[in-house]
Image (cartoon, rainbow, N blue to C red; front, side, top):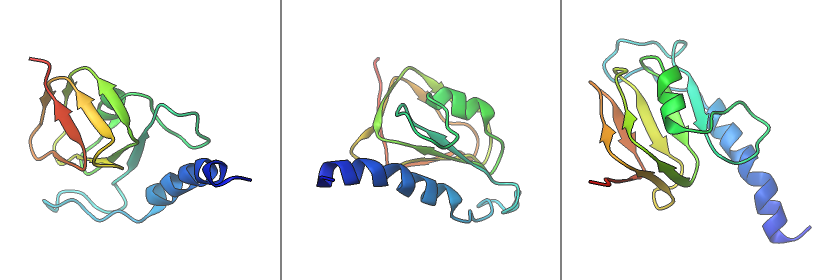
Length: 118
């Protein structure tokens, strides 16, 4: 097995490991650690539960949830209306939201690049 194949096999396992890490309660104190969920966003064929678009993940999210975004370019506007939602890219240089974004009350996003088409 070559190094590239090994990396391709281990990368999904790393994402699953990140998803299983215990999540802290919300920053505002309004949610509990038990109520917080992780929602994976990836366009890759993977063996774990995931959605293929950022807006689909935002639509499923509840306050205190974390949306973990795999590397890729995600086209289109994303509107976040869920309070206390955390959106995190898994690679600062390779997660790109290409379109207008609208943060909701208390939303947080990190480790990704936003590009506006306007």
